[in-house]
Length: 222
Image (cartoon, rainbow, N blue to C red; front, side, top):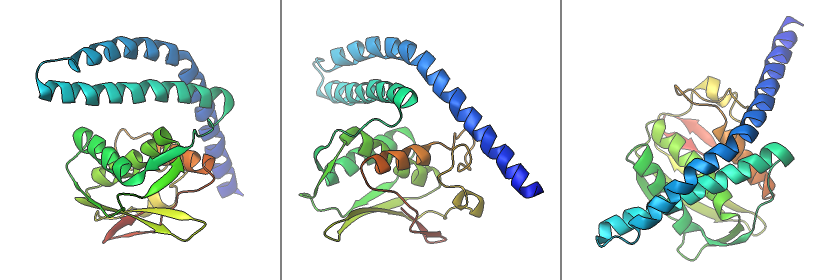
């Protein structure tokens, strides 16, 4: 009974925090959009620079800011109405995985992507949603100490599985026990414990799911 009471108190605390988070998101979204808009204008000017390297940097910055603005809109919609419906379009999966890896490589750590996805492999998905899921998993792998992440797909006819396998040290038991519970699955200082929760919500909105295949001294596979 005491254990059940402790778990109930913890669940109520998590739910209260999630409710508070939704309120905060609704309040700050307008200000965040105001901050990002001039940043987008400045980044757009870089795309017109005479130096090709500066133009490439401007292109990357514009894409990053546009994704951030889209994330603010969708997060606000999520707080108000629940998970936003995915906007399904045909996507070249290999290129999207490579783009996600490049985003993580520039922001978090250096690691190698072993991209074994066929160049012509397409999926019907929301590009921004799937990008967020891939970035989350790749960032987690890099921050856990992985030096290589292997990406491949398996098509069983009715189900297309995307597999990301790293060579990191594996997940601690405490993390494995709380993988998809908000505020509990992180073991990194400063982590929110929301990344995998959001990633799973996005996959469920597509009619799919995300799960841990295995983890240990040889690495982790999602």
